[in-house]
Length: 534
Image 1 (cartoon, rainbow, N blue to C red):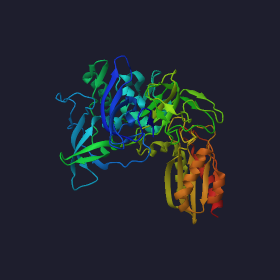
Image 2: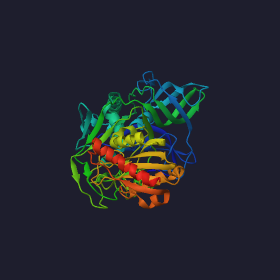
Image 3: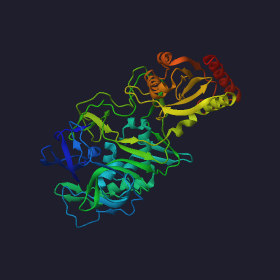
Image 4: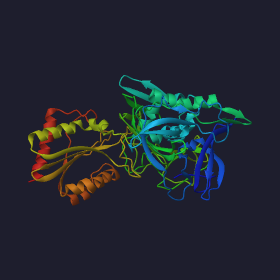
């Protein structure tokens, strides 16, 4: 995990306090109350861009694994009846004033006490909902920041989000479908966006001047979050019969209210028409190493380092379909670095400040979210012609134990072919069945964005159980590392026979195929299987 340069090792966060900045400065900082292993306390601060790292009772710069506090899952009806401390004028001003929400929730992990009173820090809710990158933490305290950085056009069948030149959101993050989904939610869901923008509005309204500083105790209006399930860690205080939340680890049952596809466009997006081994297009790039964040230095906009942080899990009720849209294309040679992808070199120091071209050290970015939304159905249309062919085959042949599955190619460090040029996962359709006492698997990879489509592979397996437990994963890894080529060596070990099934002539993007071509494709499959299982 990331370290912060001016904070000692193994310091426990006991308090998260007020924000402050000098009148002539642009960067906000936040006060922290820390405790060392000997229970000695100290006060310090860090840049607000590091908000993702700040979880109460967690450790800054840890040298070991620390146990979590008590885990609890609860469901809320909505946030409408939450009591907020924001408007209490009797609260004394100070470095460590922390605003909370107080509400009743329904426990879903224990039914002896179904209703529990919860005290949730407002900063923690905003941190887990919004501050998954330094960019969003910086933007949250700036009025109209989203309107300045993103231009939204609502077309009849999709939203087009133009990423404007002034936007410093890292280009590499748009290669991740989960990150695009959550950013779309913030930008397009009116309730969520109003909640995000209330942060800067409250900063202006409730902030006050003291000496040479602007000071503000963090607060905001929560979104409705109707029916959402919270995964949290914290502790129960018997004196007040309240559960105090230290950390929100995840949200489930989130409604997005976005019914159209979302396309992101930037002049910086470049569609690679070819290439071999490249960089990993999303995820961490520091291989578990922990660079140090220097709050006093500016990051270089041309050198972005994505570093490990503890993620918050999101699970949407409806998967928001997103893609990258690019007008530029270029051919990329084997081994040439893609400028859209972050560096894999691990520097000793990084910065989470607003990146600039004259920055003295690499710019640091986090991906603080893990999208767990079930979304494979969004990519089924790429296999409609393949499904038609398989359906026709099954009508004319007696098969048993038929199964159709869709898999995402794995994210392998140092390779990028698991992502398509539109930024969505590259999927593999797998059909399995038993024919004449033989286990058959047919694999079809989505190469609709590639000039060299990968032929369908037909496998006559030695051990279907081993295929389901280990062999499938090995094959899919090799497809990525061998740059969309079938790994013939492993097939010899796990198959009695394996064959290539050539594609018919068709419009691969629209998956349109004539009836004559469809039947010819199916007859070629029949011929292969007649020879393989005979």
